[in-house]
Length: 60
Image (cartoon, rainbow, N blue to C red):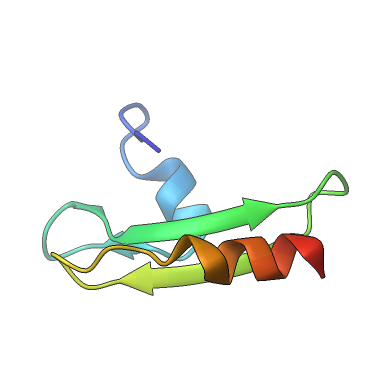
């Protein structure tokens, strides 16, 4: 997600804000229809998310 203005508000809410870089961390977050986080994974630069991990969380 892009988090331009106010800068960092969304990434801070999801606890993926990197104060040192002034930007959000690379992450994949899946929120269900009730607003609950059902999948959250933070990735190192250059590491691609595995879509199977996310799909397993969604399928429950």
